[in-house]
Length: 147
Image (cartoon, rainbow, N blue to C red; front, side):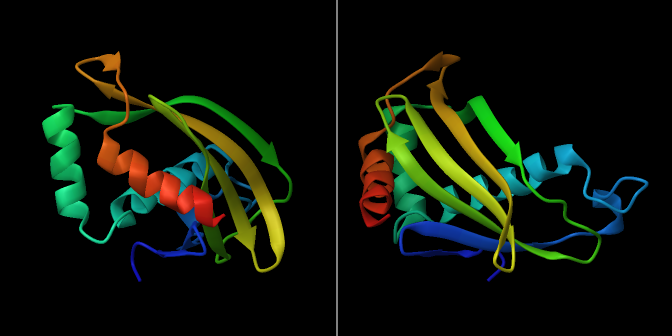
């Protein structure tokens, strides 16, 4: 599955480490973990709900020109990843509030946690924070209840 899958309230997707992801020592460059985690968050939102087009159409009606933007991020780098490793990017809702979502994210290799992060994402429309539309809030809280 190209975009990963949601299992037990957690989004899980795989990423292979390529040469371009590493520094001169062959270890993944720290900023590239941000790219891996962004893909995880994007694919998690893509897979929310059975009818994602209707879900996002309803959000667009409620808040035209909406977007999710990273407001804060806390990252713990625990172990390095290297070229050719296959990593699992795990994304799970921690807290859904009026205009923001806090997501927990992990980058794993096999049974080892390499990165642990908390990411606060704000919902904006027209350049200002806005309440998350009902359809998206319901879908995310449903996943939150499953974790």
